[in-house]
Length: 199
Ligand SMILES: [Mg+2]
Ligand SMILES: [Zn+2]
Image (tube, rainbow, N blue to C red; front, side):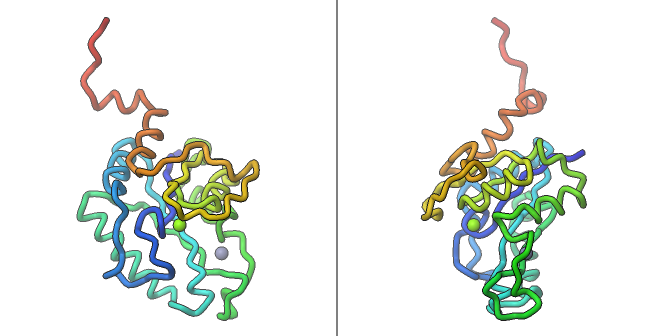
């Protein structure tokens, strides 16, 4: 079984530009490359899970989104970070494109994308984490059985809390998130480092 870090895209992995699919306006968040590098070194799959209601709303197509995602994958690959999979939810209950204008089980806070990834990539969800910038990400992670980290940089504005929406950790720097995740797997980290001085 694999373990994974599920990461939200807009506002977490890249700067929050609402409904953006223009590669030129896509900027990787500070610390993201370093964080993903560390997670990758510690054998976590990197799985991007993203709500893309703009498709249901007719702002852009799935094809446009694929292009944006592959651009992002390319930017990260240049830095040595390899995204294992991109999942997205194209639906929105208030959409205008009939095929997508539906309540679904994949739009976060529902856990559908994580559950599907777990099946397709043999992921042990109890060993996995969700990182996102709003509590809907946290809830999706918890509903899937993962631990969660809120990237708390002001994008959550409503703070409706319940037992699913209480993050295990809050951080303002993505590298800190990777530190937290890898510390919990400390033996693995030590394998790559000199043995500590004995006392
Ligand atoms: Mg987000
Ligand atoms: Zn959906």
